[in-house]
Figure 1: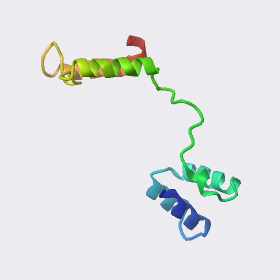
Figure 2: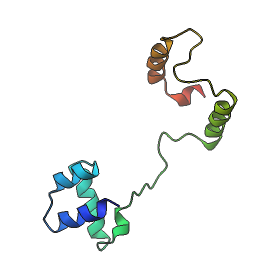
Figure 3: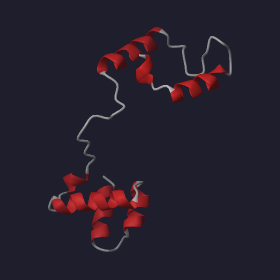
Length: 106
């Protein structure tokens, strides 16, 4: 886990929060939250692991994921670029899809 040595270095004052954030791919605010969680846990490294406490807001139901997998197996040649209206139509479809979330159409 890359966070462990970086958090220790920040705690020792040998690395700034900004530098640690760049190395971990986090904002300075997120680094402060990681440090706070580390300190509150009694400096336990387990506290540095990713801790999602709720399902992702964009997660699809399992039944929908299974249907998508079934369709992919049944029609493996389909892709995002495929369109019955010919090449290039995928740009129009992508713009439409960006404005209309997937959940509304399943």
